[in-house]
Every structure is written in C-alpha cells, then in structure tokens.
Length: 158
Image (tube, rainbow, N blue to C red; front, side):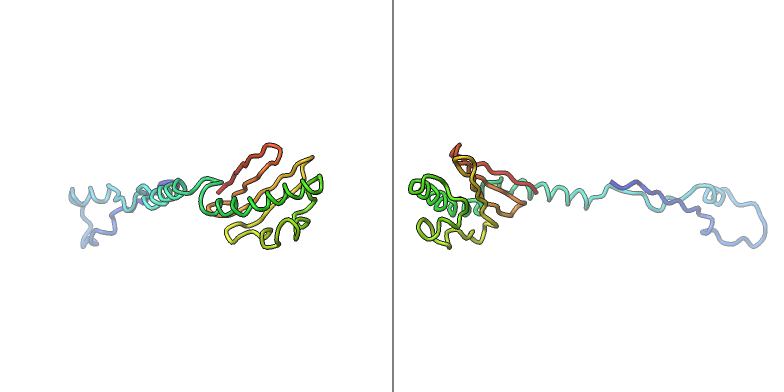
C-alpha cells in the first residue's frame, strides 16, 4: 500500500492585496493562520477491486489434474500407457524412449500431444517407468503416472 500524502497550502494567496497597511480582520486572520487541506489519500478502491477480482477468478479455476485440458491429457495418455504395457509383455522391459513404441505398439500420432497438452514426459525408473504430461491454463500444471504405484499425481502453480 502506498504511504499517505497530505498537501497543505496556506490561504494567504486568497486574500486581496491590502490597499493600506492595516491589521487584518478576525476572519482574515483565521484564514491566514489555518491551513487548507487540498488532498488526502483515500483507500485505493481500484486496487481493492482488482485484488478481489483476481481472487474470484483464481477460485473459479480448476485444480491441477481437473478440467478439460487435464482430461485431454489423461485420454491421450491412456493409449500410451497401454502401449507401454504391451511393449513390456513382448520384450520383458519398458523401452528407453517413447519412439520405440512406433509402429508396432502405437502410432506417431498417438505420441504427439493433443492441442491442449504442451508435452509428454517419459523415463524408465528401475523396473518400471514414469510417464506424464504438462499443460498450461490456468498456470503451469504437470500430471505424472508412476507404474510402480499405478497412480497419477498432479501439481501446478500460477
């Protein structure tokens, strides 16, 4: 919040120039002695409105792993995770890269993230694998699948 600023201007310039040197009348003397407050800081109404609007918008946003973009990622990931399982059944281990799934287990189109998904991430992890996808909106979000736990975990930030 910004510091308050008070501007004080003395009212001497408001009096007419005296025609002769005389003692000022009582009302004139009061005006000369009492300062006039021109501007006083008031609460920043617009800043408060912006803060409230931002809080309302963020509270209406879907949590990481929820919403249409996350659902598009989960849907696209299902075919890849199934292809990884089929690859392991045939070869005894998971592949070193997703490209090894093409053409026998998945198409190159299945390995391309859909429009709402920014990227796919894959890596071998011991005898298993870790697979995930990232998407934006709102914020940056990542959902990861751990083959050992057979579960998804999603996180994100604004």
